[in-house]
Length: 99
Image 1 (cartoon, helix red, strand yellow):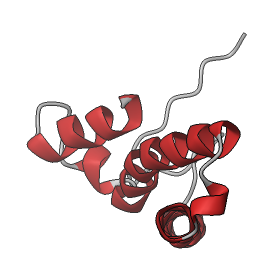
Image 2 (cartoon, rainbow, N blue to C red):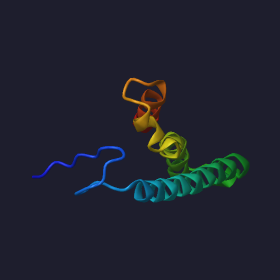
Image 3 (tube, rainbow, N blue to C red):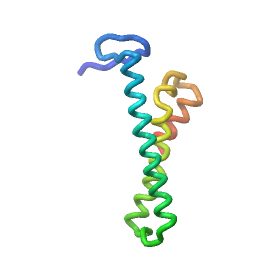
């Protein structure tokens, strides 16, 4: 199996240009924004409508709370990677993805 090495700013085989990375990051951030809107709609509906407070919807509610962390981590995008492995932003992004 060939291992993929992604080097920021370097183009070549299996590396993306800066423009391609920017496009992917914009799509990722757009998707994360839509996800956050959906999560907040779920939280509002669960809080306002007592009829929706069933056991299956409670699982969806708690999964939505966990999805907030993943969506915020996606909004951070490559900035966490570019700031370095030991940076607070990278560590925070990793925490959000693991919660």
